[in-house]
Image (cartoon, rainbow, N blue to C red):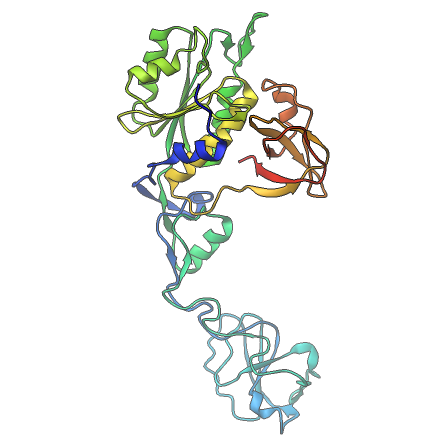
Length: 398
């Protein structure tokens, strides 16, 4: 039996040749949070568009400081008012935070360094030209790229878009995803299961994950363990979508029908397993239509882990995301058992110190302990435990 690929190699094979979706759509700023920008946001004018006062005070010429200690106040400039004020040499204007500094004034003396009189005495010792001012174009000049295509938009980006006059922004179409769960032992969440049955928690978990990953959830169907039913369900699920996620039915048992059915549908296999735990049987295939098939094992923690490890990068690739997956280094708060043959991906909780605690592993069916965790920690392949304080990789839940 050929050696299974490492996670990194399996992911590379899975994403090979997958392109960003070509379709864009315009959405309002109010609907654009967490969407992926399709075209850059460009500054339509200098930012700030004028020399702006950073505080309340008095605007003067820096060159006057050497010979003058008190200044007639010839006007007041408030935020939002025109800065066209005649200011003779040796005089000043009272100015508010955010107001435009009249030319040729080049220094704002803070209000608290004055005697508030008229003429006003100012203590400008040590203040250089430009102090308390925000020069025109200091942040950006007209034509600068402010936010790049492929950026996942945050509220800060939306505020910036509004400052350049945008009400709508072009975003990538979200990949359309359908989910197909399987198994005679699975019943609906609202059903009363028999002693040998379990409720379907994978479908709603995947729905939430897909939304958070940036996908467009198109629905879920459940197929019983019958090859004709499974094939019909796959054909329905693969209609007018970008990704089909199947759950269960991918191991080597007599009732694991997905691999054979997808092979019969001429799906090209990218990976058929990976040297990981949980999720060793994970499969990634592509139908002749271009639809990607992400086949996950059926146990819920396996679904959670492999969805984050394979489905999430696939969705991000189709979205054209330019930022990397949010893996970050963390330290283990206690020893963790490793596996010489497989990289382990364990649900883990981040502590106030920044280190992570990995709950005792009770198998890939233990969703209860996973519910109190913050993400996956990657435990490298080795013999023996990985020691407390070792730096490992951590992937927050989407």
